[in-house]
Length: 148
Picture 1 (cartoon, rainbow, N blue to C red):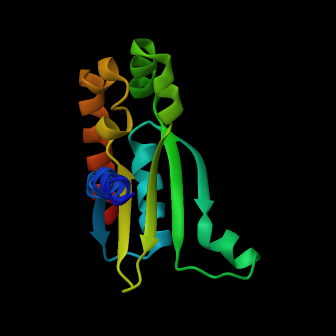
Picture 2 (tube, rainbow, N blue to C red):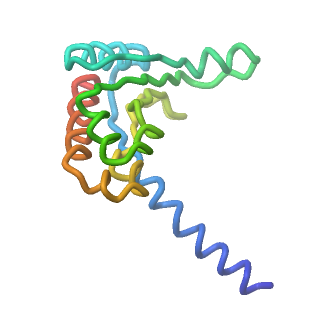
C-alpha cells in the first residue's frame, strides 16, 4: 500500500510544477478592468475578434461569494486559428485564445495565458508547426501592450 501511495505522489506531484510552467504571467500596474480594456484595444488593433469578456468576480458576487477582480478575454483571428485546424481539426478545442487578468492575494494584477505550445501538446503536428510560434508571438505582444 505504501508503494502505491508513494508511486501516486511521485507521479502526480511531479506533474504539478510542469503544469504551472504552462501558464505565462505578466505583472501590470493597471487594474484588472484597465488591463483587459487595453488588451481588448490591442486585440482589435491587431485585426482579431473579441468573442467574449467574462467577469468571474461579478459572477461570484451574484452568489454572495466575493473574489478579487478576475476577468477573461476570449478572442481569435482566423489567420492563426484556421491553419492550426487545417493541420488537426482538434485544435479547435483550444481556440479561440484566452487571456485572464486577475488580482492576487497581495493586490498584484497579472495577465495570464496558457502557452499554446503546451495547450496543443497532444496535437504533435500542430505543436511543432510554425503557426504555434505565431500564436505565442501574438499573445506575448498583445499582453505586453496591455500590461504597459
